[in-house]
Amino acid sequence: MTDQRHEDVLVEHKDIGEGAMANEYGTADRPAMNWPQLKSGPLVVGGILIGIGAVATIAGMAVAGKHLVDATRAWANELETPPDQLARLRWEQAKAAALAGADAYRKHPNAQARLVRAGYSS
Image (cartoon, rainbow, N blue to C red; front, side, top):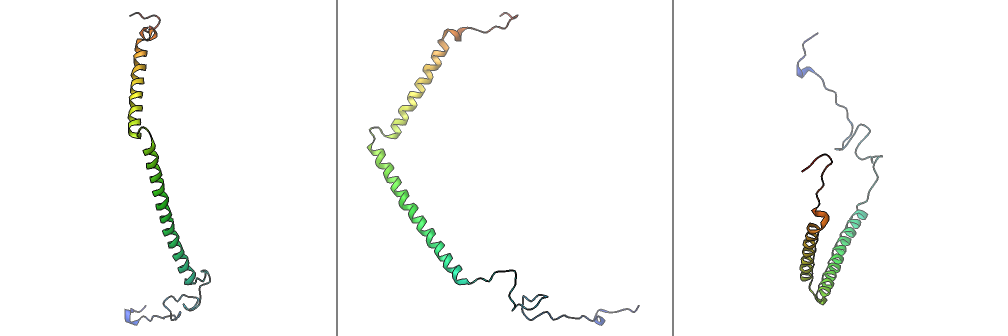
Protein backbone atom coordinates (compact mmCIF):
# COMPACT_ATOMS: atom_id res chain seq x y z
CA MET A 1 0.00 0.00 0.00
CA THR A 2 1.14 3.43 -0.73
CA ASP A 3 1.24 6.22 1.75
CA GLN A 4 -1.52 8.73 0.95
CA ARG A 5 -1.55 12.24 2.23
CA HIS A 6 -4.66 14.26 2.99
CA GLU A 7 -4.34 16.28 -0.22
CA ASP A 8 -4.34 13.16 -2.34
CA VAL A 9 -7.71 11.89 -1.11
CA LEU A 10 -10.51 12.73 -3.48
CA VAL A 11 -13.85 13.59 -1.96
CA GLU A 12 -16.90 13.06 -4.07
CA HIS A 13 -19.76 15.50 -3.38
CA LYS A 14 -23.30 14.48 -4.08
CA ASP A 15 -25.63 17.25 -5.26
CA ILE A 16 -28.85 16.93 -3.22
CA GLY A 17 -30.47 20.26 -4.00
CA GLU A 18 -30.04 23.97 -3.70
CA GLY A 19 -32.28 24.87 -0.73
CA ALA A 20 -31.11 25.17 2.84
CA MET A 21 -33.57 22.45 3.88
CA ALA A 22 -32.78 20.08 1.03
CA ASN A 23 -32.85 16.40 1.86
CA GLU A 24 -31.96 13.21 0.06
CA TYR A 25 -35.39 13.01 -1.59
CA GLY A 26 -35.30 16.35 -3.35
CA THR A 27 -35.14 20.07 -2.82
CA ALA A 28 -36.81 22.25 -0.23
CA ASP A 29 -39.24 23.52 -2.87
CA ARG A 30 -41.21 20.29 -2.67
CA PRO A 31 -43.77 20.32 0.18
CA ALA A 32 -43.27 17.74 2.90
CA MET A 33 -45.84 14.96 2.76
CA ASN A 34 -46.05 14.39 6.51
CA TRP A 35 -47.06 17.89 7.66
CA PRO A 36 -50.37 19.74 7.04
CA GLN A 37 -50.33 22.92 5.03
CA LEU A 38 -51.26 25.84 7.30
CA LYS A 39 -52.40 29.31 6.38
CA SER A 40 -51.36 32.12 8.69
CA GLY A 41 -54.60 34.12 8.37
CA PRO A 42 -56.90 31.82 10.36
CA LEU A 43 -54.20 31.32 13.00
CA VAL A 44 -53.82 35.08 13.48
CA VAL A 45 -57.60 35.59 13.67
CA GLY A 46 -57.88 32.73 16.17
CA GLY A 47 -55.15 34.23 18.34
CA ILE A 48 -56.83 37.62 18.29
CA LEU A 49 -60.18 36.09 19.28
CA ILE A 50 -58.54 34.18 22.12
CA GLY A 51 -57.00 37.44 23.38
CA ILE A 52 -60.35 39.26 23.16
CA GLY A 53 -61.99 36.37 25.03
CA ALA A 54 -59.39 36.53 27.79
CA VAL A 55 -59.92 40.27 28.23
CA ALA A 56 -63.71 39.77 28.32
CA THR A 57 -63.30 37.02 30.92
CA ILE A 58 -61.15 39.21 33.16
CA ALA A 59 -63.64 42.08 32.84
CA GLY A 60 -66.53 39.75 33.72
CA MET A 61 -64.69 38.42 36.77
CA ALA A 62 -63.99 41.98 37.94
CA VAL A 63 -67.64 43.04 37.61
CA ALA A 64 -68.95 39.89 39.36
CA GLY A 65 -66.32 40.11 42.11
CA LYS A 66 -67.11 43.75 42.84
CA HIS A 67 -70.82 42.95 43.05
CA LEU A 68 -70.14 40.03 45.40
CA VAL A 69 -67.99 42.18 47.73
CA ASP A 70 -70.56 45.00 47.75
CA ALA A 71 -73.42 42.59 48.51
CA THR A 72 -71.46 40.98 51.35
CA ARG A 73 -70.66 44.38 52.89
CA ALA A 74 -74.31 45.44 52.67
CA TRP A 75 -75.41 42.18 54.33
CA ALA A 76 -72.87 42.56 57.14
CA ASN A 77 -73.96 46.18 57.76
CA GLU A 78 -77.61 45.09 58.09
CA LEU A 79 -76.87 42.61 60.89
CA GLU A 80 -77.80 43.60 64.46
CA THR A 81 -74.50 42.23 65.78
CA PRO A 82 -71.40 42.66 63.62
CA PRO A 83 -69.71 39.39 62.59
CA ASP A 84 -66.56 40.03 64.66
CA GLN A 85 -68.59 40.60 67.84
CA LEU A 86 -70.73 37.56 67.09
CA ALA A 87 -67.62 35.42 66.67
CA ARG A 88 -66.20 36.73 69.96
CA LEU A 89 -69.50 35.95 71.73
CA ARG A 90 -69.59 32.39 70.34
CA TRP A 91 -65.94 31.86 71.39
CA GLU A 92 -66.73 32.92 74.96
CA GLN A 93 -69.76 30.60 75.01
CA ALA A 94 -67.64 27.69 73.76
CA LYS A 95 -64.96 28.33 76.43
CA ALA A 96 -67.59 28.50 79.18
CA ALA A 97 -69.21 25.28 77.96
CA ALA A 98 -65.86 23.49 77.86
CA LEU A 99 -64.98 24.61 81.40
CA ALA A 100 -68.43 23.58 82.69
CA GLY A 101 -68.12 20.17 81.05
CA ALA A 102 -64.65 19.60 82.48
CA ASP A 103 -65.81 20.66 85.97
CA ALA A 104 -68.84 18.36 85.79
CA TYR A 105 -66.61 15.48 84.67
CA ARG A 106 -64.19 16.01 87.56
CA LYS A 107 -66.96 16.22 90.16
CA HIS A 108 -68.99 13.26 88.86
CA PRO A 109 -69.08 10.27 91.28
CA ASN A 110 -67.81 7.85 88.61
CA ALA A 111 -64.77 10.03 88.01
CA GLN A 112 -63.80 9.61 91.66
CA ALA A 113 -63.72 5.79 91.49
CA ARG A 114 -60.39 4.18 90.71
CA LEU A 115 -59.95 1.06 88.68
CA VAL A 116 -57.93 -1.61 90.41
CA ARG A 117 -56.76 -4.74 88.63
CA ALA A 118 -57.58 -8.07 90.14
CA GLY A 119 -54.78 -9.40 92.24
CA TYR A 120 -53.27 -5.99 92.90
CA SER A 121 -53.94 -3.83 95.86
CA SER A 122 -53.04 -0.26 96.38
